Image (cartoon, rainbow, N blue to C red; front, side):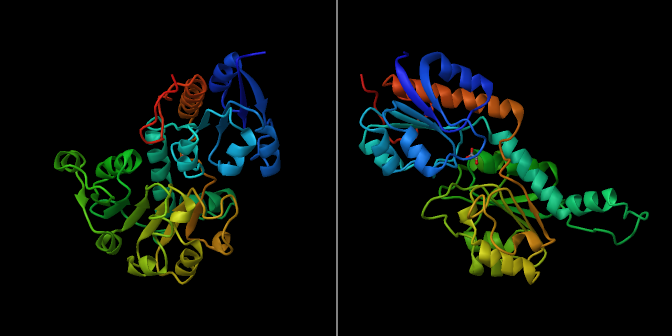
Length: 328
Ligand code: GLV
């Protein structure tokens, strides 16, 4: 018997899995699907740590199910809106996440969405495969331009900035909105100009979301904000689904009040808001932001490092609880 017992809610890439298996007795949900809630509660009983995913709500009930021995919850993601951090902190349970490593992969994927939705990549591929390409046409699948257009970034953290840097390469003007305005040298390094939210929405040809999900950002883009967007503008969401009121988005897209949307995340993930799949001005991906081989390998190692440190009573290297102290 090893020193720690850890619940692993989904098999991570081998590198992280090996680190955990070396030091812990693992209670593993081995199916490649989100663990059912009741099973999660049963499997959590008596564990020292939980290695979870963004698909697993980690709330008071789960912490109660684990019991007083629970020392750490570690998610293999940068976003941790699925974890009740305040409750964990109250109980002295460390919470770890995996920031930084997935910044570039997520920015790349955001740009894949932007390019795909604006330039007809998905319908173009479908048409070509279906044998419907009949030769060059002056009007076939014509879409949006990038050079000299404005991209509005909401949430100028690591990922927002990486998306903005790529936009500069496309010859775009970058404006952003963030809870905290960047320092002048950070703005000029991109370069990006700060904007109030309403003006940012009005002035963007591409509006891209990179803020965390919290009570301030939930439905930040709803009916009212969609009405402010330019009719030729595109909305991109690679942050968290509930930042957008998707029912309002479906109406705006259906009525062609905006040009299109590229989504990697969904309000009711993995369910899709009715009407979304029937639209031809959207590109829909299955939450692939960080899905590159090296990124996911490193995420699994960081998540394992966090969990092991937390179970030892140390502060995890990428700890999200404010002011968390080690147990020793
Ligand atoms: C993915 O969405 C993440 O938060 O890492």
